Length: 452
Image 1: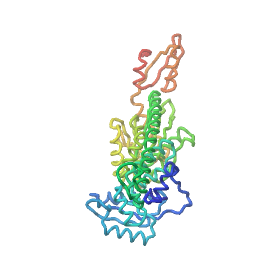
Image 2: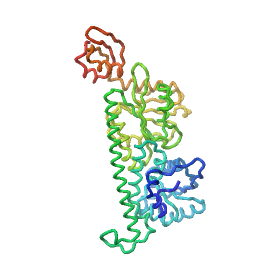
Image 3: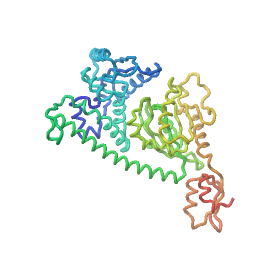
Image 4: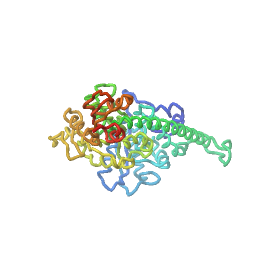
């Protein structure tokens, strides 16, 4: 894995069309890149910093890197020029040489000047946390929408950092006026900037088209009255495991499954599956990108259209890895990101997953109150209890009603047959008599045909 565009050669390679649109994939046989991790401890809580550095290590490993060392420095605030102190920079440089590190990865987002200065001082490729996450997303995106979103975020991250990356290029004869009067370095910089800005404009246009398509799909789902249940939670909390368990139990089609792997950001693409539980009590289950501490704002913005799926949900399942000692912090991170979306009025069930991995947790699966459940997504009894809880929530606004549908209104009768639980049906002289359990909105919409 090559760090994102930190040298003259890399920027020139990056600016080819292929490298912008098709990030290099990593083969299983490829030698892992050796990296040294570095971070400035400016947290009020020491545990928060330790957790953040451990996550950085996990992120590096998730992107086929081999962390060979870790250097930290406790500071009031990051150094504006070098992120860490000048003495610590020398320590990092010596450690990188001693440990034969190929690159240095920093735990926070570096400013363009910090990136430029550190590269010059360390004489090594430098990458920050944001660049690392962007690279991971670039290699994991599968659908057209996810690829567009990630590419847009990567280029927006790159744009302000072009100046530092062109430090090695000459800048002579630069004066105001036309580009022809500028030095070679300025010309290259301006051409690269224009090209990236043009590509971002193209991506914004394409993403708007995709968003419009998603809006149409969302409208069709709303018209079908099928409840939408959205999975949300910290990365690697078990959302995809729950999705696949539901598919195994109720859909029985392996082609409908999503990628399930014990690693950060295994799933990026939004997946919606119809879960057919029987008795016409179906619902749609949506899975999307997981969250993480210090998730880059550029990615949150890029994936906003995708995350909007949650805004139209009838129920959110907040999945928590209960076996993780930091699960409470993970919950806060998820709630913080959800607060940026329009989800405040949507019912939520907190699903404490992986209870089987907690030695002191022996009485699962169990429901705790109206909005909490402890389960192991890999066990059938847990899945059955979770499904029952979901159905109770999403169908609580449903009522039993009796309708007499005229034969010339066959489309209405078909709608009820396909989207409600029909307990009785009779063909009478004046039409089709149906006793159904339907949503209150449907009962009100077709009130003129009610006979109860």
